[in-house]
Length: 130
Image 1 (cartoon, rainbow, N blue to C red):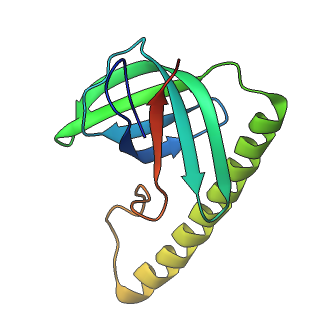
Image 2: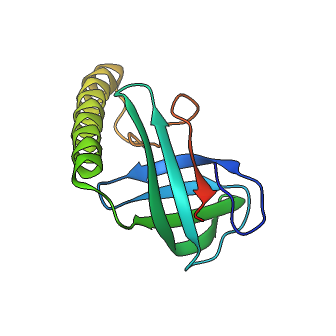
């Protein structure tokens, strides 16, 4: 969920997650420099964190808005959880690319986007920092 100032929290789609920050696609425009709290909720691999951050980059994207958030004041335990999540996610993506490469070769597919963001199953968002 995301809220900035007096705005009520709202959902965001996760584009990318690292131990330093997160890229989000949101329906509401946010401005660089806005302090936020990011609530990351993923089922597989499991992750349930609430982290303070600052919007470092904001731009229109696909009829919506991209918000690049850098985490601030992250604790060691939270950083370890994020690092473990990112490593697990990377392993899943590599396995999927390998699987698609073999199935694509067998089907005669030689081009196309084999990468994509994960939608729907992994809700995340932001809430205004107080």
